[in-house]
Image 1 (cartoon, rainbow, N blue to C red):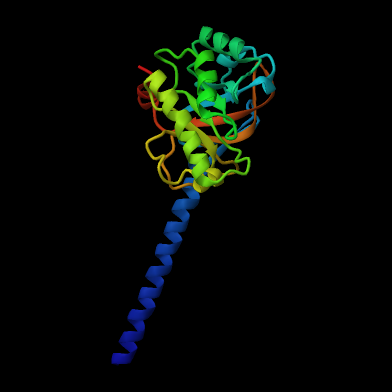
Image 2: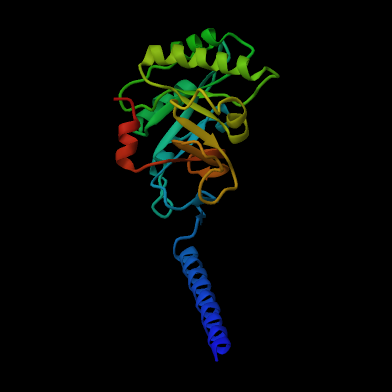
Length: 254
């Protein structure tokens, strides 16, 4: 009798465990339909991760002449362009040929904007900072300056870190705000895993449905390079801000 009772308890436990697994599976299945990790937006022609409030793009001369009024007015299922990062400078002397126009036109449409510098680690970091500072006038309501660093040019980790820190320090000293670091996950984990935790991170990582594959805290996530936006003829990068509208306002230069 005792053995039979033990066998019955074991069977009950197995049935209970199976039911729990089925219920949990159904819960996640239903939620995946109600709250899918990403949704396709026909206007933008890409899937956009779900659960984020603030969406934006980044542009350079590769997007040619942008019609910023059309960008401002575009609305696809309630998603609008809430900010834009604009390439300003590169190296010690280059200025993006569309920067001045993009900067003025985006401002005229009241689109929150930020400027970025493409970093050439083999050139003087101090001169590169001066190039950016000379071209970019940041005011309250703009986003902090951005350092786009994604090419190593064969330098060592210490050389990269020292050069990047010099640019960041020069720019922070001028504008009084910590610059944002833009890079991809592999580059960040190789060069900036330690010593850069205090700087806001803008991470590039594509084909990920919910969030970028990184443990470090990020502020912006570039999740696609194939978006389409009214007023822009070429494909454009799409980004997400981590936070709500209040967080975003607080993040802007005060």
